[in-house]
Length: 332
Image 1 (cartoon, helix red, strand yellow):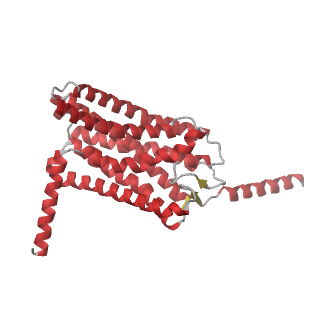
Image 2 (cartoon, rainbow, N blue to C red):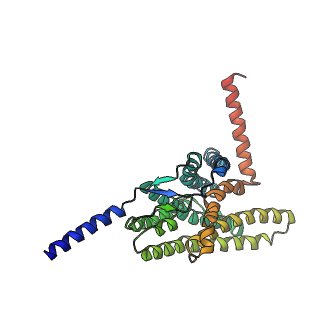
Image 3 (cartoon, rainbow, N blue to C red):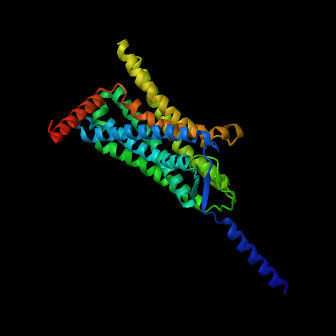
């Protein structure tokens, strides 16, 4: 009789545990309960989203349609722009919907998918940015070897490796994340399903998960960051040797802008995913996340094409073709 009671008690406990572990949705707290600012934030982020999509899509179209831009540098650039459109579209539309309707719920499946896509794109962008910095290093510091090294046989594998590394690394994270148990609460203190806040909601032992996140974050941030910084340091050293003051200032201005965006992107990733989880940094995570999910994708099209004569010429040519097409169809 005692054994039967023990079996029944254990069965009831298992049933209760199973009922507790099933969470069908999470609540994204976003920027808090600020109804008076919801409309203002919606308009602000809608403008940012429109500018980001317009700038990056324009770069993609220009590079694909103008044969003068069919070079390794612009091949990397349109891949970065494509990545940025996916990056921004993964988080901003959901945040805009929440700000507009007030509905902050997201299904658990959609949350995990959003987190996976975000991680894939962030990992891919890290290595893509380092490939772009190496391309500029060869063009400026090793111009005689540039054409022989930076050809299709080298560019395509670099870009493919960037995407594959992000895919494989985050597949591991998704698998381990799917093994965690979530028994409540289900409120995520973020504006998208970021990995660290999601892990904190788990009732399982998350030490292995945290170790994997730290290791993969190190692999996806430190090596490409070091390569990028090394490339730009060599570029700056070469620029300082340019005899023309005007040419040196122009090259330094462009290079420093690129380096600022790259440092901002890598720096925020390192702060969020690699530094110890302390209260001071925890409160700033959402602010840091805004930089690499919202502001950097918007700034990249302007920074990487600013004062770029080839892009400006391609844009002017495209505008002339569009005007000619419109005149032909309107009969004016």
